[in-house]
Image (cartoon, one colour):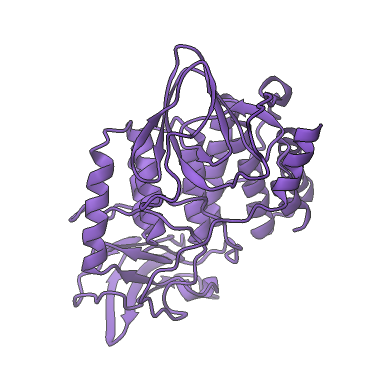
Length: 417
């Protein structure tokens, strides 16, 4: 009881990691909106074309079955030398490989529970790997710490306050975009880019006969006409850190709406900028460092996507994850959901959150289940789902799981909204 009391006291002292802003980005409403991502590494293979995913129609969310929570969590082990009052909540690394069973007990939670690849590890967390198992954490200095099997241990193999930082906890921003039948921009949208000849993609309109595409920026007005829903920019060279915006106008056969513009979406800050050569060189160096670690493909993609995101290369992060041939871990799909939410595309984000939830239930990953339910509830609320019973059910599922975990921080966040 005394330990639990000290745990709950400590949760009130926790705060979010400081967000890193990027220098020299003179951005206007035409360009990138302010972001709330944390610091991270970055990478960038030169000459990689931006290939965008196919957008599927919006579908109603099918609430997954309630997880069997009591079978997946156990009381936290007693650790006599764990000084809860003096430990922080510093981000130490990411779980990148698991062979065997591994349970995590967070400093701020009441129980231990199974976790999977992509889970963040923080100072004060305890991990227990089954005997004969093998697992690794990628530390923030890009070194790898093998977790000892058969014993309860903290991430004492990872240094604190390392020189390099990994993108930590992409906090979802407030959604302002609702699903509307407009040719809304999919890419480049609310992002920085590596390729000076980006692929421009937008949502098609069934009644449209053709589209007029415009890219505007400082001293630039490039236009093109097409019957497709994507086109490569082939205009004058784009300049580093200058804000550009794509506008698509659909010529419709609908007599009541002969022209429909992407601006009708009504969401500001959806522009893009080209990253500087200096930052691109740093990206490439750090990408080479990550690839030299020979991580498993999905773990490597998760790390690289988080690295790209720290430099606001959100579309590059999305491409990296969606290029994977298959998905095995909730973290991959949940990160895609976060990225599309940040781009104000909730209708795409919800599909990824739903897929992440399904994986989390299969793998008995309670932490990922709680997050997926919470984000699905927020999206349904944001896009104006009239089914209040479904929205309430999603929030209730998130609350139930966070209570099971003893995550008072998340519970307070939900109940105060």
